[in-house]
Length: 416
Image 1 (cartoon, rainbow, N blue to C red):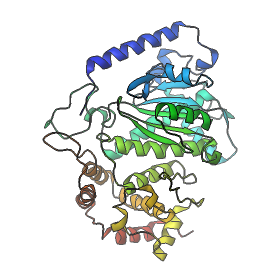
Image 2 (spheres, one colour):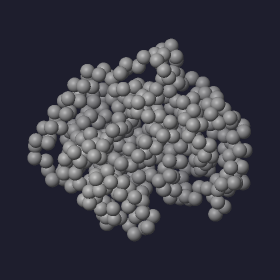
Image 3 (tube, rainbow, N blue to C red):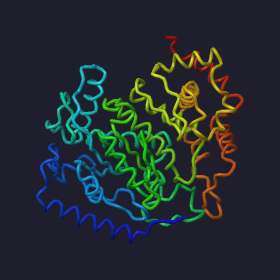
Image 4 (cartoon, rainbow, N blue to C red):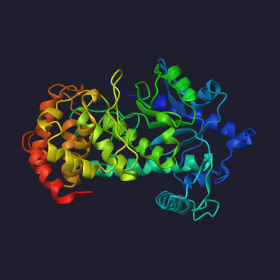
């Protein structure tokens, strides 16, 4: 498996650092100057940022591209960039008027309070704004992404130092295999690109991934080892224009990318693992906004119902869900109907209630499987590996989990 050499990474970093300095020396257009930090390196450091660009961002063909190249291609857009410890993020989001909904206002007040504190209680950041301007939305999504990364790492029971350093050659037999790089096992940072215009997003996606889609897109850039999620708020019938809906959607898709990237993206785990966990983390942001994966030619079975605890009790009572012995073998999102989406989420709600240690053990059993002699990825007998991981981590089998899950649901979920 290929590993990026340290000297190459160093040369690239130096080149981009030089480019970044040149950008500072130029007269930046007003829209590129962050009103909250004034692009002051000390302020950026307080927020944990590396820079506002330029930096590498994915690839085109076999060639790594930079944010400057993307800006030239999407010259009709104003793209704000930020690099954080684990992400590179681009935003073309417009301003957003904060609604009067007390739940939304409380959520934003808490988030902006944390952002304000990181800037040394800088009063430039208002905790009760009427409008989220484009720069404030970039700061919020940078914070949200890093907070989700920290939360997911905590559930996995891992820290940054558990993974190979950037450019470090992975040696066979020196401890458990943890992937090929420092970002949960990936060589490159996770990428996030957000826009208002679906046309702009599809322009980017068609050019740099070859995809043309009506929905958000996850993609694996193999050369830099980066997993991206791109989304436009015009997609999904415009529901993502709501800031909380977009936040939930991003968390859903970052969860998918974190699962894929954990101990390196060399194969895909069964869909119940990825989809169920993505639902669970998304619903921690808000249960009202739910995302569903689909496959080409097979649209997702979606409903507007958001009280999934009640729905779970209903499907258990009427036996309207697929048994786990069938569900855990699925490899295609098209096999999941709405009731099974709810069941996959709820089974994870049950399993995660049993603690982080069990979850960490389970994930190590299904991710990062390699031939111990060669470290070549081993995705053979993945269903059997899932069965073994379930037994060793949770003491459950595909035939016993549903009965215990149903008992837990009856004891813990509301009836209305």
